[in-house]
Figure: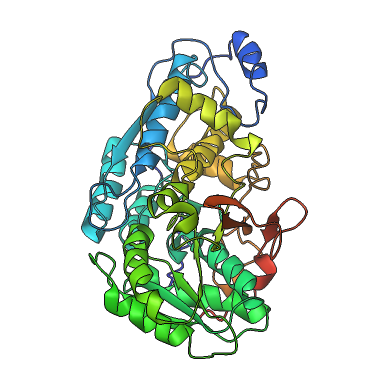
Length: 441
């Protein structure tokens, strides 16, 4: 399987669910002012009873043997509860439907068909590895896909897709650029899957930008219970050059932790190597569970899309979680999936406010996004907007509009800003120019 991207440019008629809006309540302004991050981040409240709810869907895999993202639908539900407890949007309740794609193509297609059957106006803040299965049904129904996790390259080509981050392309390009200056031989351990097939070229684009040879590409089963042989093979390849410390880059989603357990045992028989990966494969919870400062991630570089969870720009999201989902351990404010869902719903809220008292349907949501809407996320991302083709259209990513990455490092068992390597004065680097050189075929 090659994971080759498919370009779709059709805009078929959308399903329509008319709703009647009402004016914003005056109390919404006072409520908004109470948040230090400002109205650009916390969703605006609206007064009035309204008639029909505004119906959207969020999907993600849960309870599977591979990558799971239960925090994303949980965050979506918490967001909707917060909106509804403060008067709704333009007087209408926000109804969030959730769907489990079970990490398979059939499940992803079922979620998309259900979205059409339920008449949702958008799919928001979701995760699925099977874009080939869900994008076509969404496009056929005219339903926009706002803020996917970015796990597949198709999310950056589909005409109905409105990504809020740079996905795996940006994370891996940023990681490659950071490792180019510090590593000898680099070995990427990645899933033997369609999504996994898309990873090497992105890591190599960053390595190339730093004058480093391509990484070794090592396949691994996505749902294995141990990775002893893969760890041994990665270590042999990473230590082939005895003059420079090699680097091993596991990118196996939830199974990265399983790989590192095997890796910890195998590395005793080899020269020292550095590890590095991307957020979504590792977070602070995983670092803690694997020994913190004495664990295998100490000193590892990890790239992410957004500022660290400790950054004050996340305070608005944390406030909503505390108010509506306190004690729900599925929602980790440091999880990149949870953060992406928050930003995606910030975009949805901006769209609905722009529509105002007009008809809310999949068609009007899509047209509002296409008509030059610019969305502020309070500094968590650049101002988001989706032109017909982005700067990265020439390399096959016409919908990729935010290629920012942050570089973090595990220091004394804590995930903190790296403070060197890639990253400007604010710790954020735009990887657009690096991705423009990617050898995408």
